[in-house]
Length: 224
Ligand SMILES: *Cc1c(COP(=O)(O)O)cnc(C)c1O
Image (tube, rainbow, N blue to C red; front, side):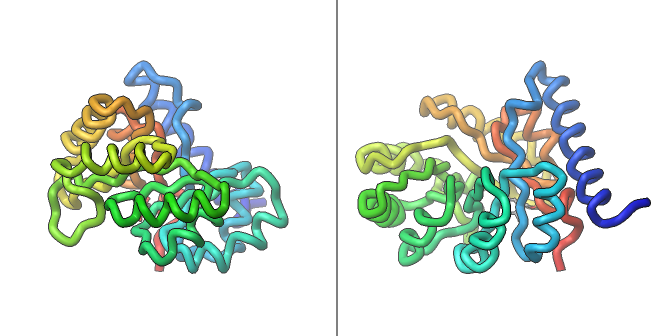
């Protein structure tokens, strides 16, 4: 018999196998690469199937949507971790610090200040990735490469725990040079984490040093 549960388990196994294979090509250990299952827009029911299949690390891109879905899921299963992968408004920094176990979208000095205040107030200090606008695209989230050193200085001075760098390369062109650049920037700044790679390009990202891949549609199917 097969059902949606088998489907979720099969998708998860397939993605993990692809991560392992890409890692092996690069002489890396696939188990050391964190798979962040991006559940944005998907209902709790679909998320529960992936939890039943063994997945524990998830990502959402909106604070409000995450706040609506995750408290109930967390009550049903312990050991879940939730990461924020979407742009964060300063007025939601407090909610984000309370709700998420890591933040992948720290991208400006004002947000450093807001997160630092929220962390000091709550005592919760989720690790943060600095998002870099790696393709220098107008209107895209992330700090400009030229502004990265100053932003890191600010974040370190504010005692924000830095996990690494994050990027979303431009659409429609080969992502490898952008992943390689993020990897180099992280190394230059002594940062361990590289949050890069989505459903369409995660194998390339893994070969180029990703420590966290953020995968939605390959696990959940297409978003509406
Ligand atoms: C939606 C999203 C993803 C996942 O995208 P897929 O192509 O569905 O894997 C990854 N990272 C960010 C920042 C996202 O917003």
